[in-house]
Amino acid sequence: DSKEFAGAFYIYAILMPGVQIHEVESEIEKILNDIIQGNITINELAKIKNRIETRYAYRMQSIVNKADMLAHYKIFYNNPSMVNSNIERYLSLTVKDIEESANIFLKPENRVVLIYMPKKKT
Image (cartoon, rainbow, N blue to C red; front, side, top):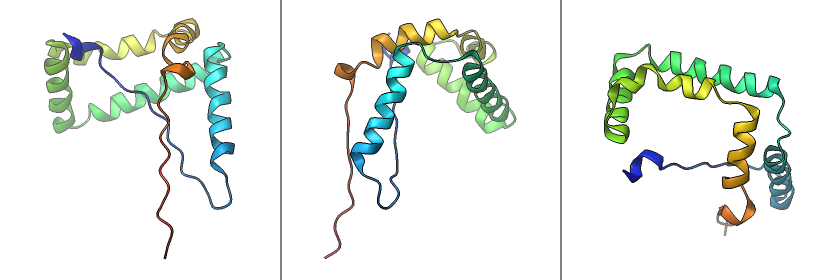
């Protein structure tokens, strides 16, 4: 089922007055290159895992969110019981796992960059 592996990864930035788009793009490029090259520390990964686990625990506090998660796992994976175990997939990630995936998915040739500019006031 193609829905099982569907996904999107996106980065967005809202520029402050006086900041140029190319400056922000350059910083994002540096960060992505660090990830691709495996320059992620264990501490950085631990922070991310803590954030993911906290969000998961927060979502599980509400009946509505639990129902939403059960429906999600039923629709996309045909396995609603994954609501109890999917968090372990995230918590088991290693720096090497991220580096390998980044080398596949975060390469410049696999990206789409969209720039939205506000209309100039007339």
